Structure formats: C-alpha cells, structure tokens
Image 1 (cartoon, rainbow, N blue to C red):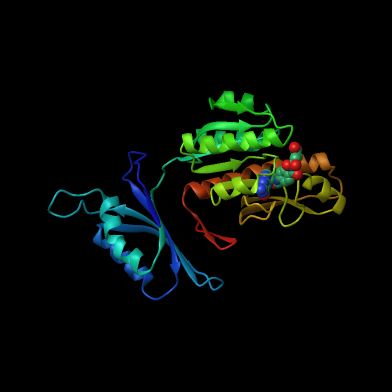
Image 2: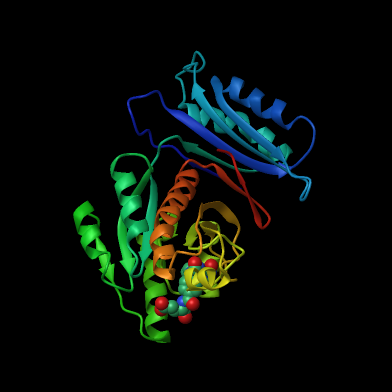
Amino acid sequence: MYSVNAIATSAEPPQWVLTLSCIDGPGIVHAISGAVVAAGGNIEESQQFASRDTGRFFMRLQVGAVAPGGPEAPAPFEERFARALAPVTERYRMTWRLDTVGRPVRTLLLASTATHCVNDLLYRQRNGQVRIDVPLILSNHTTARDIADFYGVPFEHRAISGAEDKAAFEARVLDVVEEQRIELVVLARYMQILSPGLCEALAGRAINIHHSFLPGFKGANPYRQAHARGVKLIGATAHFVTTDLDEGPIIEQDVVRVDHSYSPAELMQLGQDEEARTLRRAVTWFAENRILLDGDRTIIFR
Ligand SMILES: Nc1nc2c(c(=O)[nH]1)N[C@@H](CN(C=O)c1ccc(C(=O)N[C@@H](CCC(=O)O)C(=O)O)cc1)CN2
C-alpha cells in the first residue's frame, strides 16, 4: 500500500519525506538508499527502528533532489523516486508513503467548551509553527466561535443533547472529512465519546488530548480525580482515538509538578498549558510524518 502527496510549498528547494514499514530483514537500508541515489536524491535526515516486539522495521527519510534526471526530459523527482522504490517496496512488501516536507495537513478541529487547545493550534498555525490547514472547527458548544472568528476560521455549532444529535454530529464529521479532504481530525478537548464506527473510519488519523498523564485518571474529570488522589505531578496525554476510551496509542505526554495547595480548579488552570503544548507537539509530528504505528504503540521519529 503506498501514497504520494507532492505539492511544493515554499521557495526553498523541495524536500521529500519517505516513511515506511515492513518485516525486518537484512539489506533494507541499503536497498532504500540505493533507490534514493538512483532517483538522483540526497538523504538529508534518516531515522530507523527495528521492533523486537513485532519484528517490523520502521524508517523515516528526508530527501532532497540533487540531479535533475537523465538525458531525456527529466521526470519530477517524486516520479523518479517512486519508480526507483517500486522494486524495493515490492521485494520487502513495504507499507510506504512519500510526502512533501512542509505541506500543510488538512485538519478538522473538534471542540466543546474549553478553548485553550483550539486557540494554541490556530495561533501556531498562523505563525507557521504547525503546518496545518484548518477549513473548519466543528463544536457541540459555541464557546470557541470568537476564537475561530478572530483567526478567520469557519466555525460550525451543532448541539448534542441526545443520541440522535450525537449521530447527526458524527455524520457531519464524516461529511466534512470527505468534502474537505481532511487528513487529520483533532479532538481539541472535544468532550463526547466517539462511536466505534467513527473511530474505525478515522483510525490512525484522529488525535485526542486527554487532560491527565495516562493511564492515570481516565474519563471526563481527571483533575478532580488527581486532586482527590493527592498527586504531586499532573499531566496531559495526546493519543490516537480508539473505541476504548483513553486507551489509544500514546503519541506525546507532559507533566508539571504540583502540591497539596492546588484546588481542582487551579490544577485545571495549570494543566491547560501542558495540554496545549502536548497536543501541539503531537499535531506537529503528525504533520511532519514523524509518527508510525507499531501495533498499539507509536514510534516517534523526532
Ligand atoms: N472513542 C473515543 N472517543 C473519545 C475519546 C477516546 O479516547 N475514544 N477521548 C475523549 C476525550 N476525553 C478524554 O480525554 C473524554 C471526553 C468525554 C468523556 C465523557 O464521559 N463524556 C460524556 C459526556 C460529557 C459531556 O457532555 O461533557 C459522554 O460522552 O457521555 C470522557 C472522556 C473524546 N472522545
């Protein structure tokens, strides 16, 4: 299975990022770098990992084009590279993806009442730190509308007060994903549990920010649980969304020290920065093709 996304995005010479996985074995790196050279490319960044758990090999390459191609009319680098890769990907039965470095990822934000993660992502998108395009914010509350208006991002409110509303909301998510060619759905403190059907449809392309250091304190009120438990560290966890609540493969986590003097409200206040920072990193790594899945675990090439 492979895909090629190649839209040039800036004046700098274009770079490509190749991510791949396959059953581990000898000669993979040699074969891949040979394909880069054959296509007239230069490896500018390379990371790899062989998983003893699953016996699979994972690799991320960032490649620049050096040679314009052969004597005949030069084909674009991504075509030359895909052609050179074909025998290698077939021989090793690879799952691979070729993308352009810096290409903004089409991202749908889902929100509820909390706005700090939406605000942070739109601010970072605006200043070019997070390479995403956000065609829509979809929310079951109206709280984030002002922030969406400030950043000029379309906002759609659909209230949820029962199962029918929830099903309609989820149907709208799927419509938007198709209509807007969405590559990533971000649950930016979206507080409704997604159905198994939607989780399956969005498998590997929906990221949630959970407001605790998982696996501790699952559910909707982790700060209250943390306060009651008297923890000395609180945190946040960005993970892929699966049917099992707060159980999806973890992408990034962060913590901050607290003590007995913090009320639940103060823990929530303090935790907002951790949540925003943790989600920002996870979305950035997704946009830069730095996340690969090894079963229920992630490999992060950062
Ligand atoms: N299928 C999944 N859906 C969602 C996940 C997930 O991991 N898998 N994460 C949540 C986010 N979340 C914690 O991070 C969370 C959100 C909401 C709830 C919850 O109990 N919600 C209640 C309604 C609460 C409300 O309306 O405020 C419910 O849905 O009945 C627990 C955890 C997002 N979705």
